[in-house]
Image (cartoon, rainbow, N blue to C red; front, side, top):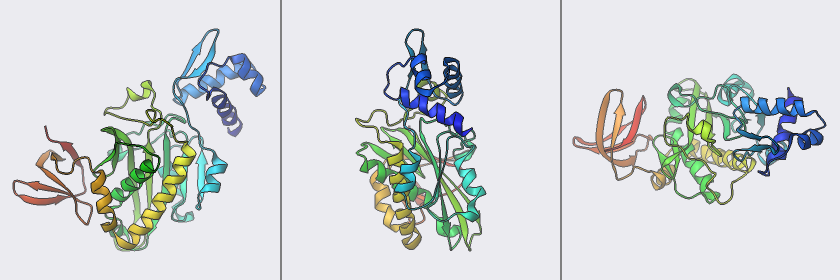
Length: 320
């Protein structure tokens, strides 16, 4: 399997310049037959990579791909990194191996066959197109200590994007990251352990880097990616920055709680000061968004006074 992925990655490297490359040249570069090249191209398409095939011209990527440089990433970050070309779910890997891990260890994949979002949604995970990773963390005081964690993770992602000069980034409670008013990244946090004793958790992040038209059409909400940037960051650089920022912010959160992050959250909050509605099951709550409280609940000024809401199936919407 490793050799098959090495061949596929070599093909993608040859196509990375963005020009058409003939099957003959690819076969010569890799030391295989043109039939083998065609089979590898077909295999990449099965993993969600969009490749143009034009008779007489050869093959060309429809969208730019950024693959992780595994050796560079492992040398750059201080914690352990488990890297895969394909895996069912990075979150599932961390949960399975939690007892063997230290806080800050990460799992990274180019493709997830069973990527998940919040509320059981599928996270579209085509090979090499986006960033998929999960980080392990342990809280000594249990799940109660993790209250508001998802907001901290969102603040970390925003900080990294701003370091890379990505403009017009914002957050939607509790942890969605938006670019230009459309969803760029999501966070899925899963926990194991007790409420008042040591607990382990996994922080899963999916961030759109280069969405193809084919996969974009399969998403049921407005989305954005990083292709509009003047310079696309490398996935390796982005991962290293995210791992370091998350580790720094999680230590701060563990020691001081949510207070140091309230100002960062409100600076990026897309809905603060606006009339919004909360969907809680079949009920709706209308009011003006006043930010978040010390527990990470969203605060609304309603007709019945100022109230905080947290947990469950709450969904935030801008009022009509």
